[in-house]
Length: 473
Ligand SMILES: *Cc1c(COP(=O)(O)O)cnc(C)c1O
View 1: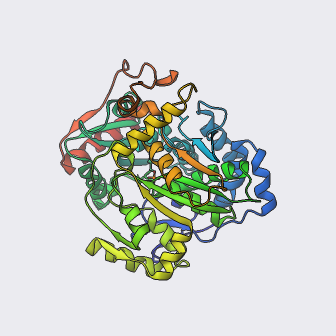
View 2: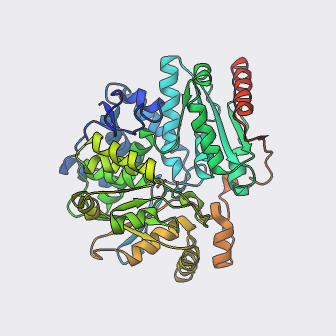
View 3: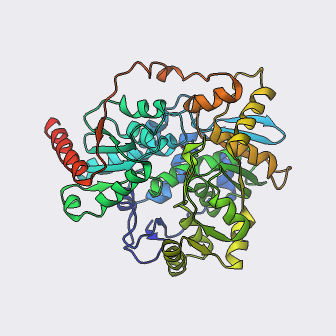
């Protein structure tokens, strides 16, 4: 399988190359050249298959010829062995054809573990086979950082530098990063905002002298391998609920559009889906687009669902590439327009194609708190009666914006309620408990360094830490 850029003007890459690279040279994102097809009969077999087994069958065609079957199988088994549940994606029946898919049983309690645990194993495998090492740099406002750190901890061929805005992530989120004390984990609290952290990462990627010293990699959601790992649970959930004989719908709490794009990818492989609900908080750029056909940037505002506080959704570009029939020139035109004017409009045909499948809905913090409270009240005597704010947004959308109530609707539950315990407590008066493996999180020793918002200071720091780590292995 080969991978091409959504803007049609960058080298065609193999799976291992795509894994280790970030953005394509033309500014686009990598996507598979064609989609592997899963037949009706094959899809039916997933209904009763172990998750790991299904993951192997679904992922295999994308890395054919690059990753040996046995290695792929071992990477998948190891990745999901870290989960605190029978399967990484259990379904909870909510009645009325609504199902909650709990994707938060991984080590850092958010759905990002599903892809990141797999990605960490893939990185390790490919690097050790090629005798290479990489330096991963990233910016995080919370969940991505801890999931990435947990996925690569202790791996000798990898150094990871994760920058968070000093004082601007929650204590649980900071501690999930700073208490992982390994030689290859480097936490930076930057004296700046999340945007400063992101700008710093971009600036370092664009600094040729720095790049000559460090083979840089990124693990943000533009990494194709993350999307690929997320396709699996759409297929396992849908086939358990009647697909491919009948369609299923999904409601997805959305930020960067990575997760819901993985669902769309499943449809390209043959899964029948009736509707994707793209659920947002008050940062409603996607809702406005799905109502009007115009994508228009506004500022970002802070909400109680911070993992969805986005200004733009980078992975939407992948959908544009698909619905334009792989027209890289058209995607490049729209993206250039967006970059220069903060706005673009799709054609009537393109809009129709997108809205056949995708519907938008957005909910403010007040509505989110009401949904958390209502969920708790209606399930007060059930053990699992708390949901996190991101999940609450998808559930509210599922209740209000479902097109066909006769089609089962799967609501993606993307974080454990204890990860956003303050919001859950203020809505319900109940403080959700952290699971056992994290119950002593607040007693663990932390390690992170505070650095000024200054590129040369950060680059010097990285130079020093990488050479110290290399000397120690
Ligand atoms: C990252 C994240 C999201 C958004 O997912 P995207 O793939 O960026 O759309 C939603 N909920 C939680 C809890 C997250 O961590």
